[in-house]
Length: 154
Image 1 (cartoon, rainbow, N blue to C red):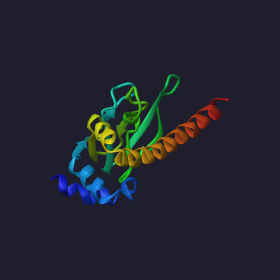
Image 2: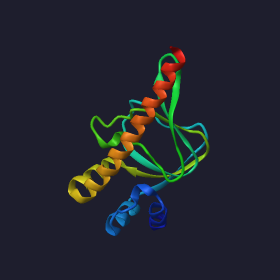
Image 3: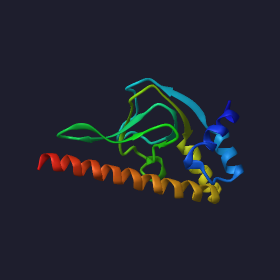
Image 4: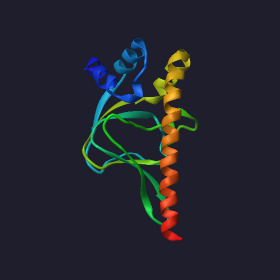
């Protein structure tokens, strides 16, 4: 089953440019998961012990705003990565993630991956470069969403 995930990862822009050895290694240590519609994959503050690539479906990345409740700051679709909080301590989710449709994803154990990145600094550097871009994109989306909320209330 794990070898069948390699073609899926090859189609994912996040893994573009990975060495063959790293791509095979990452694919061999991934697993498939499925979530029903409106399922919370994770919640803000919970331990961030995994990350995902969405194979099919759609996920709402949500920020809890006291006056508005859960507010979508970004949606994650097919081929996109979900979850960056595993990259830096204290390894807790910064957002909620809730499926908007039944969702099929590939998942990795973040504790395992952090250890492998420490052992193989080339792998660690490749992962870190990609996650820095992902984090910047998510923070920009959050900023824009908050600007929209602020503009509505001013």
